[in-house]
Length: 343
Image 1: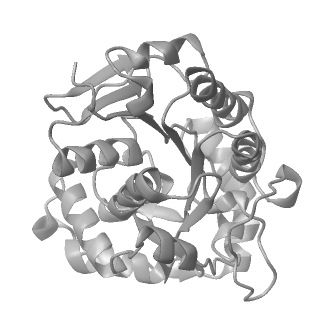
Image 2: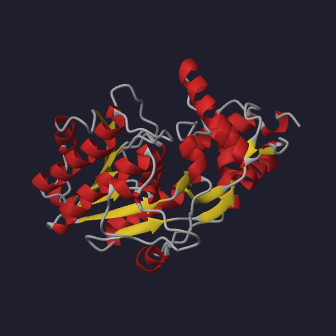
């Protein structure tokens, strides 16, 4: 075993960000050791000479100890990406178990083994929304009571656990990405699902509003920079660029040859949301436009990434590039051919 060899433990290694992190690490240093945690029913997405996958669950602390196999704790960095994302209003038992209980297990795992560093991937949704056009910046006190929606509440509580551990001396940093887009996801991400549905002609309309979106590849680089040079105990907003839902779909349409989706008034979407959610539940599908998702696209999403720019050399790519690459990747991996989309 190489005494100085670096090991990265990636939780959620089969997910959008987790698998992109592995791609990024392999591109930068093919000899780095990567230990990925995937669920028992998941398959590895990215393979490499020094990539080892371990099946387990962050909700089971026993799953974590095996991740240290063949590594040296003083050279081991954990990047915790595993989380459940939902646009529902209510916190389910499983959501809380993963997004809060899983974080608690990761913190205890890193603390008890004295690992080199923890990078916890939180979300801008853990940050309280500010009124009007006020700029939202990093904070150090998190409360589920100050945010709206099930996902935001669990991410805020998870961030509070990490912040408390950092205050007690754990070498850790947190990153807060905005809405993640980009290649390498087939639709588990709600935003990517919307893109796929639109490309396949299953999205009859969109709504007015928008949000701050960021490329998954940039977030992966931001996580690695936070691991390498982020200040212990600090958090960094990894935001990108504001884009309306209408412009997002129009840009996708430009690259797949599909006509823009018509926009319906927000009042109509809000009135229909409870019915859409109920129907989706009956047929066992995810609703894209829920009361929470509609709140999100009309909320204040003016996030400052100035701190990440200064300390992590954060520089997110243009959204046009992200949407183009995402559309081309989806076209090549979902059976869609851009030249054959209906016009």
